[in-house]
Image (cartoon, rainbow, N blue to C red):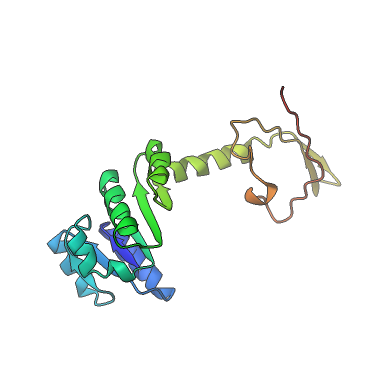
Length: 183
């Protein structure tokens, strides 16, 4: 597994992946960062620009099963993932993304997984708003049972999702789903 760029993200991710049994190599172009990572003596650290094919080759990209681009620049992460995918035939590429509007483009360019912090936070906020939307509560049986009516519009977090994709409390029981289709 290759981790390219990322400073502290690379360190934390590398250590976490190693605890799960993955073999990790980190590439970083900052010499100070490389020394800091190498001092850990936990994984190989390659100093160089991960968008340079020779650096990727020296890091063993041809043998990697996953390449994760963690630089702070979206365009660098795209180049790194494309090189890994097309030149070194890395089966799985992951790019960190700052701009959520680029997500579809990255997928169109062949990046397997795109991770966007803005989209993740937005999703959490939408999920929280959805839960708070459950305002029509009718207490039954001395407050131990509640019936909720939850209208869902096309703009809601749960729209278009399967019930198993929605994070519901374990004790929740869905008794009825009504679907209204506009023509």
